[in-house]
Amino acid sequence: MSSDVSTMTEEQILEQIQAEVAANRVFLYMKGTPDAPACGFSMRVVQILDHLGTEYGARNILEDPRVRMVLSGWSDWPTIPQLFIDGKLVGGCDIVTELYQDGELQQLLPS
Amino acid sequence: MADLDEIRSMIEAALPGAQVEVQDHGGGDHLSAMVVAPQFEGMSRIDQHKAVYAAVQARIDDGQIHALALKTRAPEA
Image: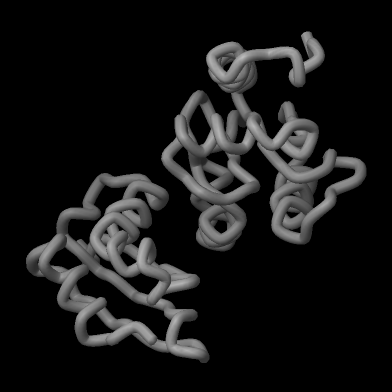
């Protein structure tokens, strides 16, 4: 369902984001892709999720600058990456790393 | 240049009873803060961070704070 985002309005982008977050137990908004992260913070979260063998969806917010703007407006979090689990924003790189080190991320992730 | 005492009092005002430490990591606008607040009991880590950012939003908006690394938790039971 990756329609061409550049033709979409901001409302449609928001609906698409909400649908992605609802459709995936674990979803990561990042710069680049899991196979080719374009930023160290995004790569860090990808490494943690891959290390835990997590199944997750991902979206490259670099495809359209409005995606990040609409996402941050909705999630009330300014930076990328943003990791969602069961529809809730868990955090950016710092928080995900901290939760992973505390063993709390593993409890939030679907077993 | 952020005033560390002001930043600390802004956080304490927003989270009465919290234990707050603020440090400058260079340049006066790259700060870190450690906040232990009773209000954080049962709050997700990100909501704890959002509460602290909201408390100092004015200093973020006027550029006195460029980056604020946070360590937050509820007090030990």
